[in-house]
Length: 603
Image (cartoon, rainbow, N blue to C red; front, side, top):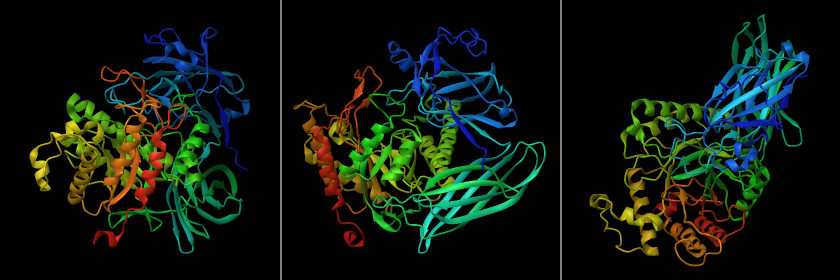
């Protein structure tokens, strides 16, 4: 059997803030440092969880963990896997720097084999800094509160020196006989001698019944070398995955040497296709209409750390409201959230945190670094999430400054990169300046945000020639509900005329509303009316989806323009009490689904 072992490194950790960034000079990374006076810290957890008085903490802090491992690990391959550390970190084991990471919402692994001391005490020390940097994703522009900490799980993964290094699901598609599967599997050999190895993939249904066994190899692997094997083949009687029938299958990936199993890795997937045709979306060849919400990974109990109970309750409530779609704003969420969407049949937009990008305004070096960071994070996100059938869109950015040519080309380059890595899904970006600058040449589907009931004064002052392109009169001089509908009808038709054949999905619309407030701009009633009013103008057959901003109120960074610490756009409060907007959302979704679509609607 496989010798792979997974060991959790959760609580107990210790934490020490270090805003002066003198910890290394003080020996915080050293194995023999006296940490008896450090604060106990939960992991997953943050500086604030360990010390609530430090709410809003920005800057460096240290986390330490003592642990021991069996003596027989001396000749094994050992890595530590962090699912998320925000935002920058350096990792030390037994006083040695063993690795670093700068991608706060994505996993990373570090080889510990050379520094590990099997059979005795080990000390893992992690320097973490959440102070924004201009080249970060996001940089100083971030529309949600971030935290300094080890935000998700930490595990030691122990294998033979001959091991499965990475498994990429390239394709899982249904056909008339079942499904077709294609995987790319990387093998690594850290042994002193060369060997030959094969891989075998066993496909099982929910009952454990074996449906198919696919294999590749054996292939020679030099000592210290690597190999990549492709596994392809049919899976008879596999059923397609869809929101109505979210059928999932387990893939057991086995590494074999002379017929003996050396390593094993399992993942789940489903068989489905997503396509664009005739200005619409097709899931498994059938028309697809999206209704749903944007959702932040925010909990009143845990902040941005995992709270899977509240995730599950949210997704169940979204389905009850008539939603079949969630945009995971604005960063890769916990992978268990995607697992739940797989199980419940909820479609997903997965997004990297390239947010409010302003191009070259800070210089060529920052622009180049930010673009490179975005490309790296997009690659890692796709590698992590590509086996999830729920994911139908890769989003490469949100609300960037598309009036700048370098930003338009940057978005397009990232979309092309996503499509090259994974041609089985649709690649896009989410635009807010689309009413001023349309840049959707590279996108598979057009995704736009709009808040005419809030920002109409700004949009009313567009250049005259923008309206004249469509031979329309300027917008009404005073706001009313028809004005907002007129904005959507005319602007969406303008985009459609410029990019015919591409479906349009509204990825954000809505309005703030405070529970219990019954009059004025922040009332529940106004929020509910906007939620129903806006989509009543989105009746063209090329409209493929509406997404309300957002599901729940969430924490926010205080600014001079907005001193509040909560964003009140949710249809439920942060502690999940429903507002009037929730019932309005259900009515809006039901009406949107009744819009005639297909060839007959276009004649």
